[in-house]
Figure (cartoon, rainbow, N blue to C red):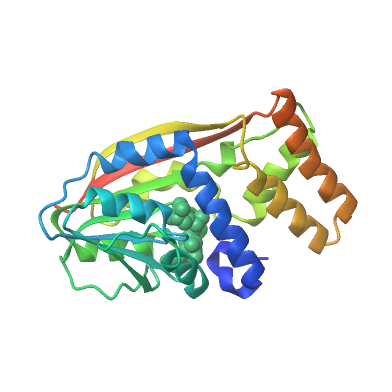
Length: 266
Ligand SMILES: C[S@@+](CC[C@H](N)C(=O)[O-])C[C@H]1O[C@@H](n2cnc3c(N)ncnc32)[C@H](O)[C@@H]1O
């Protein structure tokens, strides 16, 4: 079965809302805000410049980009019409934020027309990341920047012990809701092959000890396991209850490394 993030709309309106809500929850986490703020602060925003987020989902990262861009124009671009509709409906969208349905591999922008391109947890969900990287290189102005921020799902965990059922949920999620869980290890090489010049590469850590951010692994993973006939609804409900129990007793511990690569068009 293919990664549902390759075609969110195919799974229907309820899934679009679940994904949109989960992306908003993740983006609101203080640690995720810190990660996004840190890379957005490293970019330059010339007057009236154009900035694009590819795979913008619910629009949470693009809203932040728009705040940094001042009088520049930001385009939140995603191949999912359902998520673009979700993002457009947000009550806090600023005036300089625009939306477009487009595939990151075929952007409707002219060569050398964009100041910054942001890809936040999108490359790990595409079959061929080099297509999106080459397209980013095409639209970037000389000196323009690409930021890739992606989760190292191969090393992500929410388990507290060997064979912990919540740990199994994170493993199931990485196997069925991610296209390449080893993307981060390949990222520097992929960027070099796209012709962009890597300026920095670092890894920050998203620690989940409270809130519903880690519920993505348990809720979406559990629901798919039920659909596949692997577990019954009662067990899926019990896994969600276990997640909430760990929040209450202070033992919830999720760990997701996030790589941040910044590259420039020469
Ligand atoms: C995990 S979400 C990330 C959303 C947002 N960047 C964030 O971090 O909040 C991945 C997004 O990439 C989009 N996507 C997947 N393949 C794409 C492609 N080839 N071109 C554009 N968007 C794509 C999906 O529709 C989804 O909204």
